[in-house]
Length: 277
Image 1 (tube, rainbow, N blue to C red):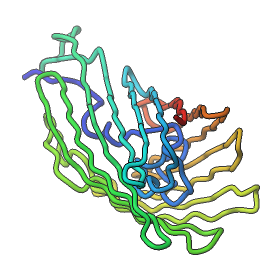
Image 2: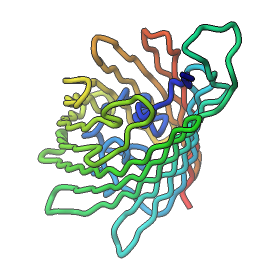
Image 3: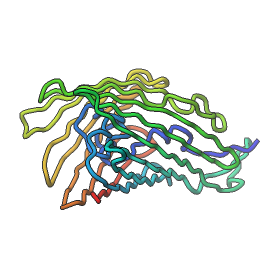
């Protein structure tokens, strides 16, 4: 029996969609955000202003790369965001059950996804909803998935914010030998403004269907030109530490983040470039 050897799979769907999301290490659902955080919690969509576009590039272990495009606009006076992603892994090996010095062949794997997010204002809170369609192909195997997500945010005090998030509610076909392709995630978060020039410190607790309880701690500074971001996540005993920065010049924003994890899969880094239209 031939076996395609790939690190992609549906777990690649959980890779961060922006440099800011990587720097926050999966947290920051309650932070005051921009267009880069809507994929963490759809509630961030309401905070979007005007039209903007963002391009992102993620490099991780081996030959795995991720390319993304975000576009935000107003439709019927309410903010909306479209997120397109392509995750590619190349030069993969096709091998037999019997060990051989050389692979039978080489191939590539690809995951494509499209997410549409919409925001509403409910009293003093923000509500965001999202729908995602994804398609993945690896060698001769393919799978599709359709998921819903929802986020709710509030700011009861000028220095306090909270959030509730539900991600990946839906159906997904198993790819090759995978089970439970995309895990359902529910999270609650709180963010507190610190005395350090308006920076925020946030704590998120995610309940993951596959990984159990995942705590995330994040911090972001404030600034019109330079902003610094850092985060930490504990997942099944494996920590992820990440940090990054944002540079703003007129309508342009450049974001960079680097993550460190104690795994043989390697360290991720991501670069994002956005511009207000």
